[in-house]
Image 1 (cartoon, rainbow, N blue to C red):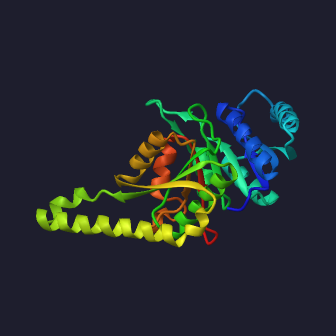
Image 2 (image 1 turned 45 degrees about the vertical axis):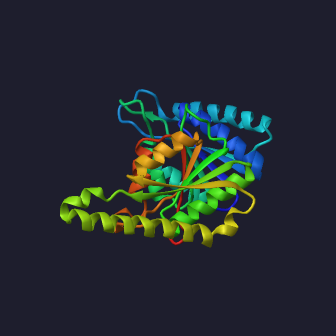
Image 3 (image 1 turned 120 degrees about the horizontal axis):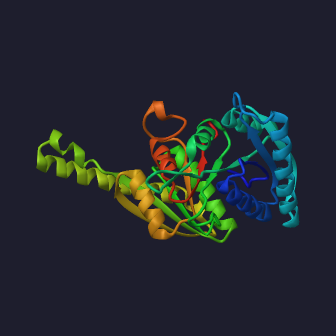
Length: 290
């Protein structure tokens, strides 16, 4: 991802959107970004308030947001109110204005007191060709000071890695590059115990070597960044969650496609699980080929 110059901020005026506004201001201050504000009204049958009244109300709130950003020296290119399916309209608008980053709130609180991205944010991440930053309310604000970048050594991971390094460098943040060796112990019943343990050791060794080769290949990307690397073993989404907590991460940057499974081509299964229980804000980046 290049420096975001044209940012689409999609808002439903919920609490997560308020934090998204703060993130937009931080990005604009660092990169000179222009912000386009978007609110999507979803038609509801039998709703007693006319759509034109809702549009007027939304336009008024966006005007207030424009004024708030202007006081921080942020240029707002446009304030748009559209009517339709929210995820579809966000993706379409991003393409129409040539956005190079989409910002949206990710603020659904589950019965287990965990925040998830919600269906709209997940759908936008699934279908948008631009990077999408899902901003989580509460917890640690996304200040780009503690960035966690999980990699599985794939081409998609490399795109996320480059973006994470660029953000860490721009904001003088700390970058932790994480790889998780998938736990294959559930396969023990399918193999003779000693043979399985030998194979598991070889597997983990090869994974660690592949991780080191990945870091060596992209060594120049890390120039000018404060960074550390870490290897964990287990279920990837659980270990990423644990690492984010351990490091106090305020942002996770991931390549949005996985290295396995054609059915998960547009959104890797690990990314899906992270979005279902966000430990902090998450930036999903797709390779240009996707």
